[in-house]
Length: 274
Image (cartoon, rainbow, N blue to C red; front, side, top):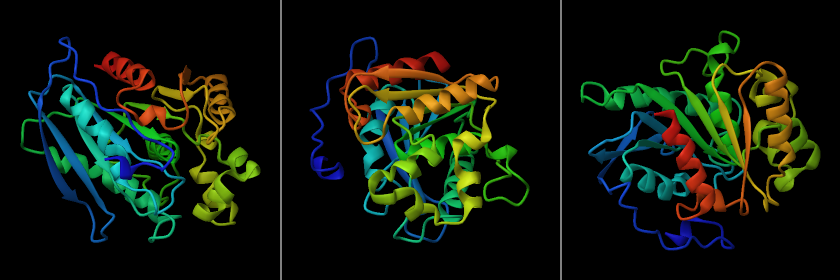
């Protein structure tokens, strides 16, 4: 599993689950939602399912093709073993056909495809939360507000609405990320230079959301500055939203380590959604 993470990140061996969270048997299924090799999601089915909330996992990697859905696998296994139904979503990224509008079309279609994947199987989607790390945090917050996008905009007519977003060191202020030139100009590499995609994709352009946003951020994160989460939460709350900044110990990758205290804080919030 270590090869799925950046070289400087080495996840610790997964702890056994506590007696308060007995391990469920987990089945994994592959579901394509389009013809491209990156248009798929994997459904993690816990037996028994003990949590009402389904979790859509959206990985990060500064939207680049070098990083894929394998980054979400440890979280999907861990959460499913604790009773959450998980949907680990892949999408086209910059370098393999992604960008604007393709990545956004994929994230929208991929989330909607969860409804079809569980239809007729007794797997109710009473509540659906998105869990997005880094660039995946930006995509998750965008997806939670896409029903308010102008008609005809990619993803503007969702079939499945999100009830909450948990952003893990998310890139939640694209304008500032662009100013800082984060990851060698990752924002422009992803969205191009035209202003309209930046406006439509930027979470700050769509505050307040009508669902809660929990913006987790590592106190030692030097990959995505915490000011991006701070500015988003401040703007959302000033507009009447329910965003919350939750600082946790660790660096950028601690939040996708199932054994970390940071991820324990994420699970605590997820459990509260049930």
